[in-house]
Length: 441
Image 1: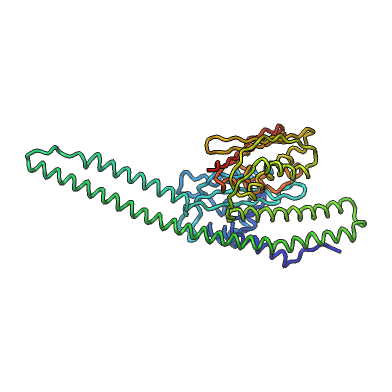
Image 2: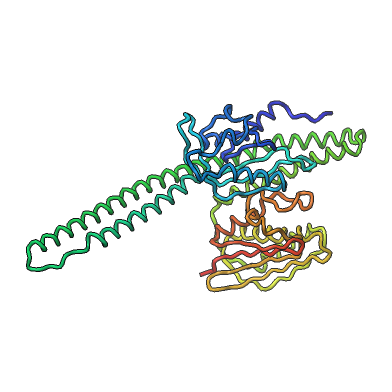
């Protein structure tokens, strides 16, 4: 029996990728574009047949009319870091204009990009996945508001400095007329300023309404994509795992050690892909889930989460749990926060002979702070900005398994409750995670 993926299944995978609502490019290690999502084409004013097979920076050069353009240099450095470190790389906000299709110049664009490697079993980089979010509307909206504030300030200064320097009133009729004319001019300027403010506010309101409509449409697309992932992607995944299992059962005794190893790699990767799909869908649902607030016994939740996490740990791990202040929140989601943090602490402490986790809490004013610390592998603070991103891993899969979604889920849950989360780490010495929640009122 041979394991085969049909041409139709390959076409379905390609169709699924191209219809993803996110903005994605797939690059070869030499930065040649090999695949692109429809959403990326729409955002960059390009067509698939025009860019696939071409070098990234031939398709998207810097805007020659912008002397400060640095999009190419910044993106090249990020991609080179991915090739060098074999780790994902998240970039700061970038101004990277895109060429107009008619060749008349460039469209102003702002992006929030990230790049991550796709590797084979030997950790050779096959592709680089480039993901971007178009934040142009947000940046321009903020610019308009700032410019509007400056305009208003300038008008006020002009009115105060020039027009309100009124002559002193005397019995002289001419001076009285000058005084009235000055007041009239000041009034006209104030009316003009108010008119410009109202016009600008109407324009900003229209832009805000358009952005809300786009966001609603994007959410519907994401729901549709989640449905596709949940159903359409699982079928071929089950097929791959099923055929691999049958092949293992039928001809395992005819294979050498290397053949059996490769079969195991196939099955391990299909299971990992299944977990990745589950966590990605969970992450997507978190943004839409309505929060059901109730009283939370945080000490009990932390202890239960540790018991669950420690039950599958590969070594004995001890817990020091202080009395934690109670909170209000969605019990299902806060349970997930505790489990993800404590299972991470157990996982990254697995290579310690004496693994130890400490959980503490405190109250300062109207803020509750909870802390989870361990003596495990820790992490390099230079890569802190990747810590809470989706698919952002700071350790190799060969060292510590995982999907890179757990901390992103924690971050989303905590922020949806009105709190914040941060961490400190030292390589080889451990990590400390803190999160806050508003105190119950």
